[in-house]
Length: 198
Length: 151
Image 1 (cartoon, chains in turn brown, red):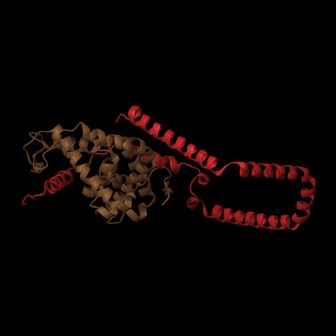
Image 2 (spheres, each protein chain N blue to C red):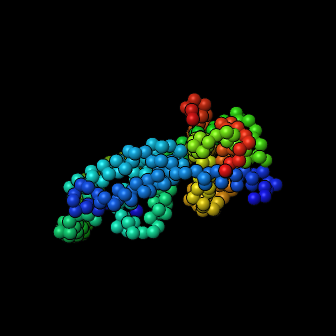
């Protein structure tokens, strides 16, 4: 697939068909969420979402009647996000990644993993959502990406390893550390004694 | 669900439930505006600035014929050029004989100098260059982590 997909020019010239607009509005939150959780950056996620819908427009004849349009969009959003991360972040990994790990380990108080159902004391659903999204954004990319692929995209460990081009052991370690880091961030931002789910 | 004795497993299940319960993040209202504006911009482009697949059929056919003609011209020209190449190369070699001899003598001198240098010196110089390069990368990485990373 090309990076810049060809555009099907509608007969009217400048205006895309109205049902593409409807289609886009139906899926834009899902596409944006996928990109935002993978990149941890709203501005980059918006750029990626724009590219996803431009590709969707190029394939709209197929997508408009497809029952798997949502899955197609999610896959494209995931792949474009991973491409974006590998293009713009991997070049700095050697310089920046280890320091973040060290910093996260050094200044965090220990968390009682024996009682993980006790975050979010006295916070309502909106606040809980905001806390979790913020905590995800705070994770370093090499932990957040496999965690998101595992928990949100339901990818098994070996598929994640293939997608990211890293070893299975590294994926498992990164996800374990991501969970621990997420728990620490949540433990610091909320207090205890309310279950994670209602 | 009965809690697992493994705290890491408890954490995994608890976080999985919490993350999966998250609703989708709301896309900024500018997203659809940007997409529609980009589609309009692309649709307004003249045909020759769009991808080949969207050119008019007549233009695609004409472009294909022109490309084939250009390729045929290049092949025919190359064949004609190489037929007369032998004579050209021979006369050029005569004209540039002194320059070729000079280059050959330079290469001979360089080879003699290289042979005169002890192998240990060469290995040491190579190791020094590698060590200096590694030190440069190391110092750069440490400086970047120490001063530039503020995330």
